[in-house]
Image (tube, rainbow, N blue to C red; front, side, top):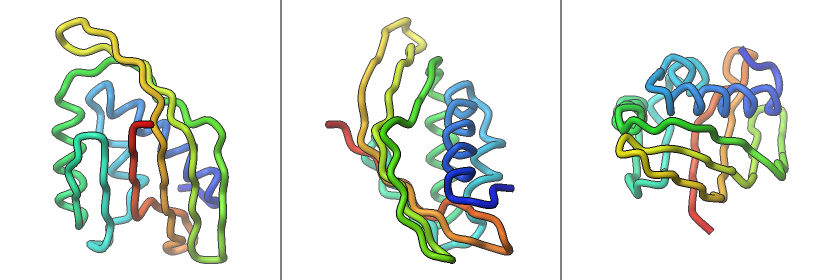
Length: 128
């Protein structure tokens, strides 16, 4: 498990790339198991609580995207118990229908230190 917000951000985007390939195991590991987590993603769905967040990611994983997400221009702010990262996410994906998607997305991710490890408690993305 990550011991710094930077490590948690690396784990989050590694997990996001696995999710694009249909594997949610990385997200299940990096997200907090607490029920106060939330996510507002590119689909526009506002998800509150662990069950709703994981359900939304399961839907996104099933969409059949193939590609990569890369977090560039990362900026961190942190305290002993909370951390925040803003970045530009560079996407390059293919749909099941074979269409290419290349989009830059603004993203904010909030981390919380839980039992000595950093976990995601909120993630928000918006297209520029």
